[in-house]
Length: 265
Image (cartoon, rainbow, N blue to C red):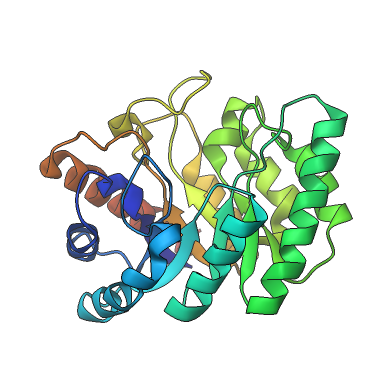
């Protein structure tokens, strides 16, 4: 496993601050945030302006470029994201499923869109991943399995986020076992309670919530998963740099403790 963090945690700061602080916290890599409104890091419509800087920062701070999060399924936006990823050297693009929970037509539209985008990903030699998301068309294990069954492209994978599965009323550990064969990325964070959102940024830090993240990482280890496990903390754009660094470091320590615990079992 490669432990990284999404730069959106430092969305109120520049890219170099995100790289520098995550390197100090001991991460192996970084997921570049291309989430409009939450950061100004990898802005897709002007990615050429920052491509060389991202590569420089990756080398300077010894952080592998593990993934990119770009939520839109708009074909034009997504093709630009694929172009950026191919040029910069980012292997995985994570997006949301879109649509509406419980609507079969919406689910089919999402699956069709993801299938077409996966074919486009093949052209650029990158991987497109989608995660179950509270309120969206793909929101739990059954709908994730439907997408897995319908999309055969080798450039399509599942991004598993235990906090969304938890809030869907499922056991994230058991859910992960059901889809592990197609998991190519993990967004990891904790969650306290079953509310709509993941909670305050500090309560998303690994170890602060109700999710069995040790059991979750053990499933990944037991199945030989060697891909990215990226911390994704949202809502911290107005947080002080100290607050962001504490969340990053605390979560990285919890990840390491989980790995060490798995190794002794």
